[in-house]
Length: 125
Length: 125
DNA sequence: TATTTTATTGCGAATATGTTGCAATAATAC
DNA sequence: GTATTATTGCAACATATTCGCAATAAAATA
Ligand SMILES: [Mn+2]
Ligand SMILES: [Mn+2]
Ligand SMILES: [Zn+2]
Ligand SMILES: [Zn+2]
Image (tube, rainbow over all chains, first blue to last red; front, side):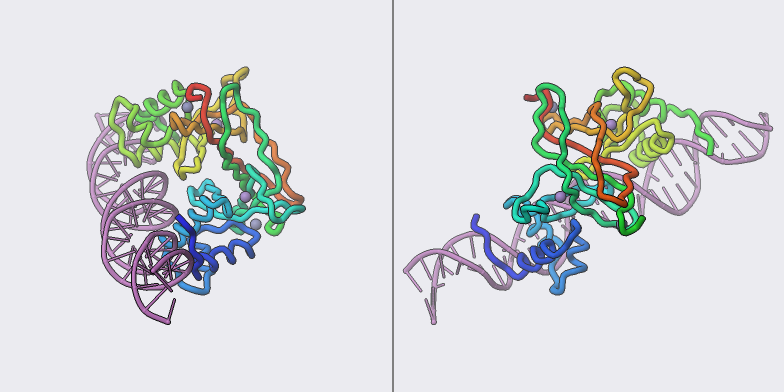
């Protein structure tokens, strides 16, 4: 299944690249210049996830947020299994550069982590 | 708003107390002997959360799971902000006795944590 | 360049989860 | 026993995400 370049794909990727925050489908739809169908946005985002370009965070509101997360030093490299912070005041989610380190019981194998702290961010406190 | 004792409340609480896992509304509905309305189950669960008897976990499937979580040593006492583990194989969620410790940037204030690791549990590996 | 292939899109409908309004019921206080 | 009001069931609602399908268009091929 070869990927194709489309205006939609580019627009969504640009938005994510230029955003310091993780974005939900509706936030993306709102912020886009061009009009893109809801289902399409989800499909584009899910494809990005499959391709490892983007990662998905599920917040306590049950919604999916998408982000391109990079290391501070190594902007290219994606760091895995990091914490996220959701500000209840400005309702944004951002990647924290804090890796998730959690020792699990014997015989358990961790494949993924979805860790979201909530509270108030620096801008809002 | 004084709480009242009802068969529903007792049944749900019993289920949660005897379960080693966090339960979703539909799991509770399935496991109950008596038939209880969906909305009622949610209301009972949310009341338990308000009262601090139960805590809610949102998994990456976007669903809410509810658990009574106790310390191993101190079965009465609830430990706060701990990790959870979701086994993709047997599709269960359990509380890990591992506290969430995450240093957030300056000016950030953490109020809550929703941390779920996914993978395979001991029974399934 | 013209044609073919098939990934991508838009639309509508479906699914799933959780909440809410309202009237009926029943637990508790008096 | 009666009054008060928390709790329940039901239906409707709200929201988020997915899916089927036909139309479109990017990329490969002739
Ligand atoms: Mn992230
Ligand atoms: Mn727990
Ligand atoms: Zn904020
Ligand atoms: Zn398992």
